[in-house]
Length: 539
Image (tube, rainbow, N blue to C red):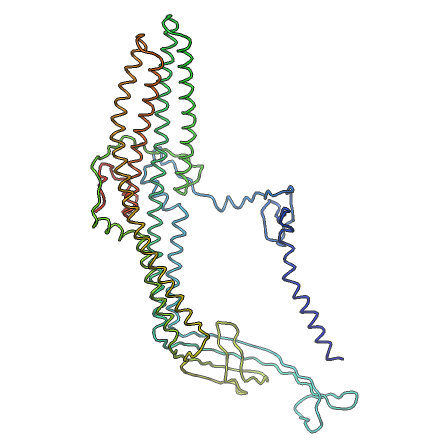
């Protein structure tokens, strides 16, 4: 009966421990259709359950979460300084983005992690040493017969007079273990080569991240400039509409016009004013988008350089086949895909080498104190090896060398080789797809620049003609020859022509940036700050 008490106690303890994991369901949402009430601190910060928070503190029922003030503090972006009143150029914004945009930090950490992965694999060439100190106590209690009595042990007697043996020993073991893989027929070498290729790919993608940021900031800068120029054109158009309205009102006072002309002119003025209000809202949106691409705080208040007066070259931009191939060969996404394909081929080699033997060495040095009699000591996790050759002596050593030959593993290594081959095939297919996509992007960017420059040339002619037509129509209306309808049509045509010219101008700048990005020629901020009359294709 006494022997059953420890078993019953262990069963109760196991039941209590088994209920610990399911009990954590109490901190999850109670039902799929009921609001979750988080634990919060006094300032409203959400904390993990049972971490000193008070459940449902000042929270109304529903699916609205409390505001955590620490989120904004930790995740805030830097403000762009005013620069003493000097406007920000595109190069200034690109420099700020390369320092402030979180994507550069993430890409940098990724590249560093890949470099550390190479070092981790190279560390397997070195021996692994583990120091372990273990202390313990052993106790034995049992019946014995008279013939087995030992004067060195302590005895007590049961109620029936039979002797009972009790023994308690304590001790400590200090060990230094060695584990060293001496030779594996090139498996680790293949893994190192593959890791180096992947590390190269992350370095290339780090450059790609900076190129993407340069391009994104450039497009956002020109998009905002186009929006700001549209606002300026609408202000001019509003002035023209007001001039037409003033002329109609003057003619009405002179008895030459009608109230219909005045009403029509007022309607046209109101329409232009509505478009101006909408354009101003769009200008604010593009300004926020520019700050976001830069990685700066939305509260930044800066002045931007006016690039509306830059001349554009009208030279046709056409790439030869050799120029396209050279451009594709330097694109970061293509180089990264190529490195990934090489890394996948090295993984095939490493998987095949797993079929070959491994030559290894293990050993340990131990020193024992106390009276415990141990013959071995198990490992204390995956970072250590079992300690063998322990004896009653205080000091013992063990050094073993051997060869491990894989014989049968149920097809595990064969499946690993097949998986590595499939991954290599997919990597090569991805490389072919990336190359084809790059060629398409370069051709499309080239065509976009050609179309934008042609549209800008045509819009220039349209703008000149529209200005002449509007001035003539307004002069004729003032002199009593023309009609209000013709004058309004000329004013609307002038506005549309000027906006088309402005859009074509900034579209040409963005197309030039797009071509540089597609060819992998975006090197730094100064690349995008070069005069636009030098927009020849990269060599």
